[in-house]
Amino acid sequence: MPRVLVSDKLSPTAVEIFKQRGVEVDYQPDLGKDKEKLLSIIDQYDGLAIRSATKATEKLINSATNLKVIGRAGIGVDNVDIPAASRRGIIVMNTPFGNSITTAEHAIAMLFATARQIPEANASTHAGKWEKNRFMGVEITGKTLGLIGCGNIGSVVAMRAIGLKMHVAAFDPFLSEERASELGVEKVELDELFAKADFITLHTPLTDKTRGIIDAEAISKMKDGVRIINCARGGLVVEADLVEALKSGKVAGAGIDVFEQEPATENPLFNMPNVVCTPHLGASTSEAQENVAIQVAEQMSDYLVKGAVTNAINMPSISAEEAPRLKPFIKLAEVLGAFVGQVTDEAIDEVEVLFDGATSEMNTKALISATLAGLIRPQVSDVNMVSAPIMAKERGVILSEVKRDKSGVFDGYIKLTVKTPNKTRTIAGTVFSDGKPRFIQIKGINLDAEVGEHMLYTTNHDTPGFIGMLGSVCGKHGVNIANFQLGRNKPGGDAIALLYLDAPFPSEVLKELVAQEQVISAKPLRFDIGA
Ligand SMILES: NC(=O)c1ccc[n+]([C@@H]2O[C@H](COP(=O)([O-])OP(=O)(O)OC[C@H]3O[C@@H](n4cnc5c(N)ncnc54)[C@H](O)[C@@H]3O)[C@@H](O)[C@H]2O)c1
Ligand SMILES: O=C(O)[C@H](O)COP(=O)(O)O
Image (tube, rainbow, N blue to C red; front, side):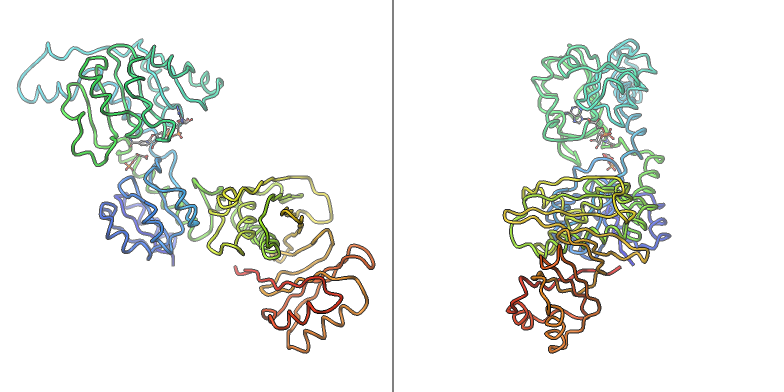
């Protein structure tokens, strides 16, 4: 039974779902803060469920020798070293929608809080001061909200702000004009947003492009008395620059939920006038926490138990419905890759995967990942569908995908073409009704070969006596042949043989075989044909 560690606080519903779906679960909600303890036990788990407190660093990931999936109950995955996870073949999944409304509402709450200085007025009133003249606010009706990042959360913020009679100017390089007009926002460039916004709210991920997007220079382009809200990620706003702008009065207020360093127990923004701070509470409502906990537990269980992939950052999705149908084709794609990977001993320049007929309607991204995994595994054993595309890219492999309508007798098949500096190799295969992969063409030569764990592939001259010679060499050394497939391009031309064996082909027999005049090459192959 797969084992999952929950190392941050999650709704108890998640634990129930894991159990119901056949996953053993270890709920240790404070472990995320105890790096050393987490490091010492992480190798015991197949899955790790986290929020933002657990830092899935390269060190942790490299110690997680059994880990297959990291599930983030929330949106931001900047606390996970995704390249490190991908290199180790670990899927990273998040829950991209479960807390978006809640977070958008927090941003709107910050908008009001900074417009009317509600936290300070509240504290003053509780202190019995009745400072009615001290807290003069601003209306938000008719004001311009500058929205940086108009994705899931930004869009909800925009809709709420429009409902509050604000004008919304949005900067998001990936926002189309159609989507902008559908939302009723004005699509603008960043400098235009800075120039016209009375309030600015951030809703982008933290990336190299967005880090420090609000710094002293950006602030200098803003209206005097602007108010800035950050409920996305610490690091988007340069805190030291914001402090200076608040001191000078250029910025009239700020609502900050996320900080450069978290947990933020000390920060120059603390106790500044009209700076409203919350401890990364954007997603903290009972509704959102229930949503993300249920979703992450379902997604992780589906992956660990059924192989379904949903909302993965580093792997194409495979729905629970398509997983059973796709599984034999994933196996096919892997064995096609594995065949070429085992007969190739030089660098791979180009890979083309052709999907014919029914296979072209399938999840070809997942099938390509599986093909690449099979192709690379003979060189790098620790590779899977997650890490293979990255490894191929790192090695400069040019990848192309071709889809075409049914073109032959098979409902659908996959054909792999691999180019190396000196050779182009092709192999095609399909899945028969028994759910097992078959090789149907090698080097353009048709055949119908069942795929076995142990095989022998030979290329030879098409001359009489080859079959007898091969049979007698095998027989002499006790090599039992379960199945034997032959093919040739033309009489007397290039021929191939593919033998399905009961055991690995002995290396000493291989020497005897390749010494035969008719044999051009002989290569023992091994395929993982397990479930
Ligand atoms: N405070 C919290 O508790 C909390 C809760 C949930 C999410 N978040 C954070 O909110 C952020 C946004 O979440 P989302 O669900 O809306 O993500 P999303 O992916 O749906 O939207 C992000 C948007 O940012 C845009 N973007 C990317 N680079 C940009 C750039 N350089 N300039 C402008 N826009 C850019 C993208 O095109 C996208 O539309 C994430 O970083 C997430 O971690 C915080
Ligand atoms: O990215 C997110 O989903 C938020 O930052 C929420 O973080 P949390 O799960 O730690 O509250």
